[in-house]
Amino acid sequence: MATFKIYKLHFTAPLHIGDKRDDEGVSMKTIQSDTLMAALTAVLAKVGTSIPDDGDMGFTVSSLFPYFQHGKEGRVSYFLPMPLQCRQPDLADVSNAKMVKKVRWVDAEYFPRLLAGENLFDGKSEYIKHIYGEYLSPSPVPDDIVRSEVCQRVKIEDRTGRSDAEPYYVDRITFATGAGFYFMTTGDTALLDKGMNLLTQWGLGTDRNVGYGFFEFTTDELTIDTPADADYVVSMSLLIPADKQQLSELFAGEEIAYELTRRGGWITSMPHNRLRKNAIYGFLPGSVFRKTHGATCGAIVDLAPAIVKSSADAHPVWRDGRAIILPIKR
Image 1 (cartoon, rainbow, N blue to C red):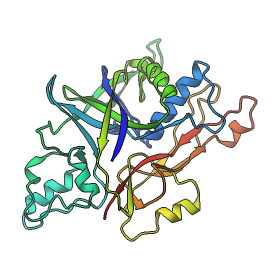
Image 2: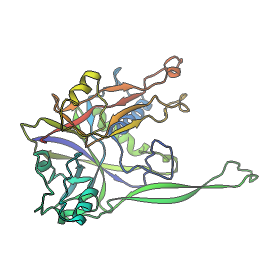
Image 3: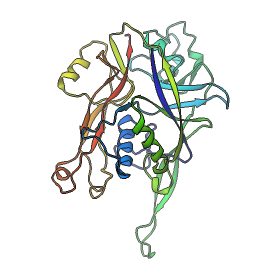
Image 4: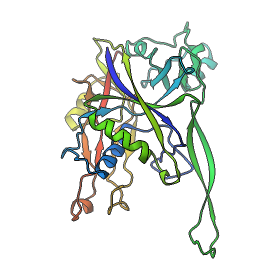
């Protein structure tokens, strides 16, 4: 059994999460753990908080996942990412297979059954009727908890009026009533609490200068029943292995399943804010690996380019690739 302190974010404004293409017309639908940690580090540094030399602020976070509140006094559905290769459809019914293939998020009430190795979608599955779009939940939820809306904006390069205004499009994220993002955490949350209070004023994502990304938050606890004899683990965060040896240990199994993503982006601190960070690859939440020791795995890496490291204003650009992991039977 694992118990986590969680932070529930209620967004009071639309949200835009830039993707690796820097295309404002497309927004990602979640925020990864390394992005959240980078935002917390940046906002704490801006107010003069001392960041440890190794970038370790004493806590580890999951990526941000959707939640849905069933009425003002009802239960909350906390959704977790479907572990890769756990979606075994009922092939006797093609329509069921298509429904199961779409499921990306599993209610925390059902998640322990996946961790225990149970096939939720066998030939006699009763769970099919609990699928709502991308969500599997014992209680009805909207199939558009996280909503995407493309809106038009105008770029004006020359305020004298001698050049034409250039229209462009922004994909912004909103949420169903009673919904938002949450994340789990382990460790000492003293700096996290301070950073989160600052982020409510700073905002998350891009386009904060036009009012995007602002939120309020509350805290809660989430307990997940976990198997004691599992040989594998599933990641709840973006995971960057510490070294080749750890990567080899994670891959030492026939039942692993993973999805890679490229991480990078722009440096946000002056005077280097026109420079890109070095790029690195990480494993997305839901990836399954051979069991490792401990409740977390991965490393914090410095993505500062050489020109920053050699400058008079040199400072590290941390990318936190430590992940919360849960045991899972395959």
